[in-house]
Amino acid sequence: MIIDGKKEAAILRDEIKKEIESLKLKTKKTPSLSVILIGDFAPSQIYVKNKEKMSIEVGINSEIIRYSKEVTEQEVLKKIEELNNNNDISGILVQLPLPSHIDKEKIINTISPLKDVDGFHPINVGNLSSGYSATVPCTPLGCLLLIKKIEKNLSGKHAVIIGRSNLNGKPMAQLLLKENCTVTIVHSKTKNLKEECLKADILVVAVGVANLVKGDWVKKDSIIIDVGINKVGNKIVGDVQFDEVKNKVKAITPVPGGVGPMTIACLLKNTLDCFKGR
Image (tube, rainbow, N blue to C red; front, side, top):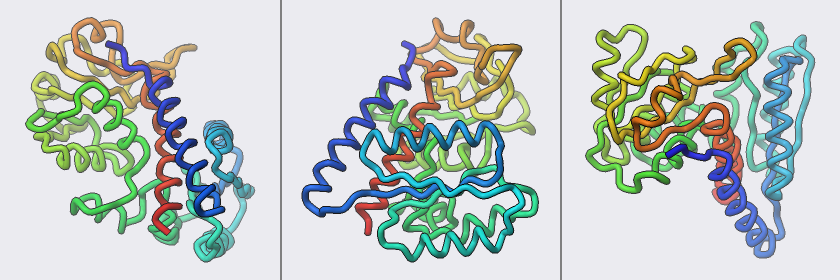
């Protein structure tokens, strides 16, 4: 089965839209997302434009605050504090990557954890690790929702995650532990990578290496979630050799059209959750 991320994201957006409409009637208030975009990095421009379009579609007020790449760190921090103190703003997002003169850690730490729709603030990271209520980073949350469309009960499943980033690998592990999976994280220094992958009932791949996972790396009836986005010639491909793997496994996400659409849908979900939490 090929997991249709576009279809699942559309279903989630529709659920979010209906809930926002209901909340507007009850509270007379509207969720609002402020996105800070620094510089003219083309992929960031496209991604932010898509976020704005989807936000408006579901009924979230969307504001994009644009700065040139020469903006000072102090000016950005001042704007974040202003947004933190504005009760009309539900969620704040600073689009990464940032120019080299701006400290990413300082920026993330300044955003209020109650408005941190990316789930990157240390308080949200700590709460997720401790099993408490937390805003979860959008990509791993999207991955989990796709996995659970295929298998509702994950208890006892062996999940293998390739990649240990703060953006996906580590929070993905925490989410799957919460689902009572046995979790293995593998990475560039892991020995016998193929053998570890062959143990996986659920394999989440997020390393940015085109076609890393081959057909003989996966076992029958496993669920494969491919987070990778790589340009090979004129094509966009994932970290999994899709054509080799698709007929062997129970389910797999394509690239594009798999995890990507769910990431933005989960950003909208996080914005709504931050709105409800105030």
